[in-house]
Amino acid sequence: MKRLFELTVSEFTEILKENTSQQSIVQPEKKWISRKEACEKLNISFPTLHKYINEGMLTKHKVGAKTFLASSDIENLISNGKIG
Image (cartoon, rainbow, N blue to C red; front, side, top):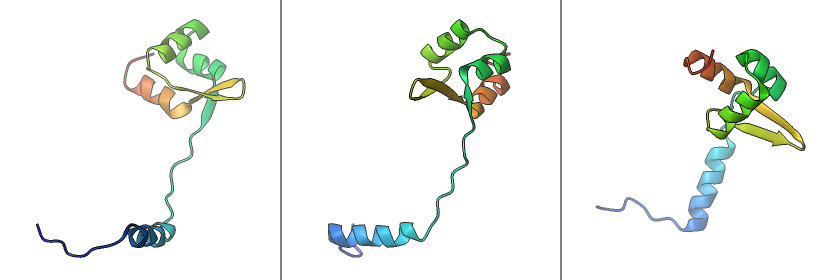
């Protein structure tokens, strides 16, 4: 295989910086809900929610002492027919 060009690591890094700084990467904002809200949406108890988290069906996110779940994860669980 022929090489088309050669770059040093610093040259490559500089090119990456120039090209990535010009693009704005927009990611959709996640809506976070409490464990209580999640239980209400799913019509389940706290122990069942804890079981779903431990089994990897849902992912919890801690902020200090508070636990939150992504609303989109709850909706995906419902729409995939795994719950509800």
